[in-house]
Image (cartoon, rainbow, N blue to C red; front, side, top):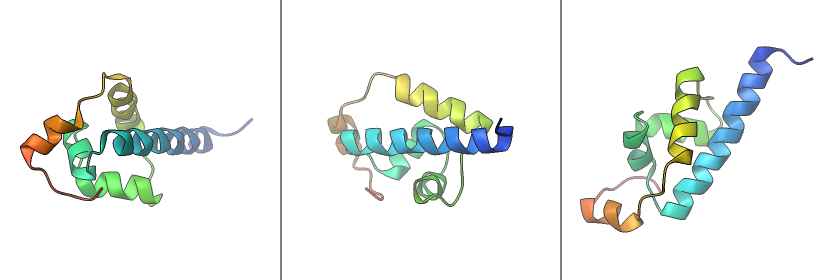
Length: 85
């Protein structure tokens, strides 16, 4: 049986892969996703780079974000947001 830390890390990595895929599908920047979670653009970047793994609260937020109806990229383009893609 694996310990909780290993399970949490694996779950976090899986959620981040799904988040990155959804973010790419919607053509959102890391900053736009971060604003919706809410976390900083740097936090999203660190997750995607594998530098950090989301904690319990942020794993819940990511799951909720992934379950939401996707917003049209046009909504975000209208805002004129810039950031990493």
